[in-house]
Image: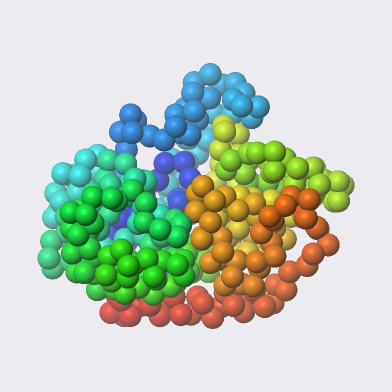
Length: 354
């Protein structure tokens, strides 16, 4: 049994980010370890524009950009994290990180998953992603680290790049979430990396069952990070083809709790999304889905995920091409997932020395 720290993006208001941290912690517990997520807290002044809009909607308790805000969402998120993810004491500044790790005496720290190779996403902790704050005797591992796209973003200073490369050279093992990440890790940091599954796919499906509402659904579900005329057109076509209503959740203020989000996907007749984890959970629950590739948030994430399962045709270049009668070979998808899960678990176990 090892005491393991998990260092990932701050858990603010992102379904996928929170669920990948939950899944990785559960996998580590099942392997016999004692994980604790390093509880990074962002200063409010450094939060994203999207989240500031979210807070404005909360304060006004009214519609924002045509979507009605659910004032219980932030409370639900906080409760889900505290109830399901083992946390350290809050860490508010980079200086606190070294103090925390000396106090916790982690035997290993895992960097990942999510877009941890995108420093700007860490805000206050942008200089910490390569774990340079750890004592020399602590094992460093990257699990399913993501660049988010097909290039390194947010790290342009050659001296900073060199420092992070030196830190990453101290890692026992490095794995990435996208196949493009293998090349990028080598080109940007001079390190070798293995391609593995996102933790939400690495974990067994059963870890999500306790969160699901079993109320019968006869609806479609749309999870759209960035609503657009393209997503509206696809949604209208799906409504027309199915004769069903489509419940929509988006990042412009129309939010639901994490358990409700999981239940909406698990109970949907079909899913429309522009989210990486929207695709992931559609695959986990074997739900017909269509994805509008969100290039601004990283297109390679989608090509890598869909390519792994032979689902490239689920990416809609033109919303007019959405067809509910297009079937998915779920037996083939589930077998591909089983094989990649086996490979990814082997990487994690070997890296941890178990």
